[in-house]
Image 1 (cartoon, one colour):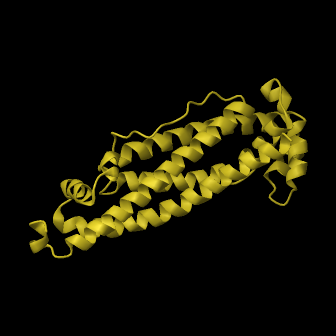
Image 2 (image 1 turned 90 degrees about the vertical axis):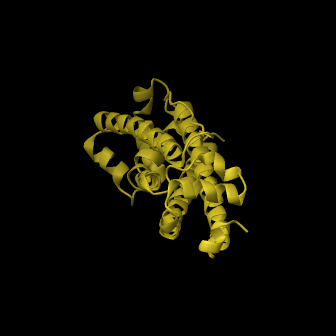
Amino acid sequence: MAQSDFLYPENPKRRQEVNRLHQELLDCLSDSFYATNKLIGVLNTHLGCTLPSIEMKRDGTIKENCDIIIQAMMNIQKELQKVDEALKDKLEPTLYRKLQDIKERETEKIAIVQKVISVILGEATSAASAVAVKLVGSNITTGIINKLVTVLAQIGASLLGSIGVAVLGLGIDMIFRAILGAVEKTQLQAAIKSYEKHLVEFKSASEKYHHAITEVTNTVKHQMK
């Protein structure tokens, strides 16, 4: 038993809880990196973007890795904004409004985009039109991505944002000591509770984001058959 356990008898239990929380965070971070790279690949392949892929900084902090994803998402949003502005410029106002109408059938939206997408991209396919509809004419950018960016920023700014990602793969005692180095012992319980709250929000936002990207890639596969 560690010496601190005599002063803080709940420490052994908290060690287990901290290990679980960190592993879940690592899983969510990894999923977000993976899904973002999938989205970048789709944009580069079908919308002519030149976005670089991202990689988890294993020797960085949680905040640094959250910031990497946030920056990538901001770059993605800028590219989608360019496509949106081009569609608004090339389409008649009534047709552009149809793209924003959630009641409009997706096949109709794809047909509308298909009329002008080649002018915007130089050359285009039905897959490019489908990607544009899924990402521009939906709530992925305005809702799902913005929510995930907000949650990532909150995690990065939390008490545990300064903890290194590398400690996530270490033993429970090492993780616990790393956290004790980041926060006062008296703050640990509050930090864990705060961390649990952020993790619940992160998991929810991450799952929605991953599902949305999977839906986009499945649509592309269907269009290319």
